[in-house]
Length: 505
Image (tube, rainbow, N blue to C red; front, side):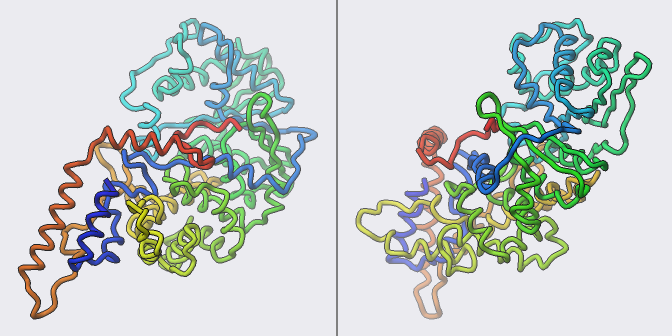
């Protein structure tokens, strides 16, 4: 598709007055190939590489004591083996897995499912749309035979958490909870404590953050509200949580220290978040949420085969880029155009086109180099150049919205922004990426004849170009697109992955 389109445009430009520089200011394909595969799926990258890069210069050790443990609830559910048959026994086993930690306070945190949500695309990939309803009537009800499969059903997960909220306040939970304090953070933050041989359930207003959708930000919010000198352990395996935590470390009490326990089995290890924060410094840590959101996360595409390692190296080497990524989280309150210009320059640097100040210049400069005009070159790879300016600006807006939520994770209300104003559009009750950055008319990329030139020839040129583009659209085959997508995903590039799986590092 892209080969034919660029080939024909290039061929036409040799004899006709086609403005290639103007042409390259558009994506020219139904999706920007530097951010998406040709079947429409967004590019992904291995997020765990970012965690490993941040860990490199520090030596993490197991904390000598733990006062508070905060656990990603659905991550814990996925780890459970040899599940009991009834939901009541599942509730007991889940609670037992919490209180086994040698800490007085344990909190388990669950995702919520807002509608519409910027997670709609990810839910679509994980087949979490149009799923059957599920109801748990009591502790004796038998669980589904394929529990792991049902954990992909958001209706099942909501029913399961609602069951746990009620079940943990029953007499059966009393001997398990014992002298510990257990929190369950979902729509509200429920506190469970044994008093006089009975479990009492209450609502903790301090830890309730009902405007948060993701467990990632809830975990960080909970940590930021711990007001006593404490060692906090975060049990999870998600790079996003590390990045969000580092971006909010300045909001912790000075006497609070944070570790993460990540991975499973032989890969299980401790990460000293406080030590990483001190090593990197507040400025770089504050820039990480915006950086991570722009270079690829669950909600925003990654740049094709650019990964995290080299972009992080570029970020570390420039105070200007660090400040721009900090400002990205509050774009409306900064010099917006200057921040966007700096981020465009960062992307040009990422694509090794350092002299260009904006991505449209970079695209034309890359296309104009001699490597694309050698006899052996048969096509122009649209995924090898930066996205055009209009597409990159949508990427930046999405990153601004995401980083605004992440940087404000210590607040009950993490954002007042709307996705519709920041790179998404609402279609049939779901959020989709804003697109349609193609030229409206072919005349937009054709050099108009000067006075005295033959208008008929110009009209013929436009007609021929329109026919070429129409032929490309008519020849687009979804099956061929899927085949090419599979070929890309079978690449041996270590920083390019095809699915966004939970990171068991």
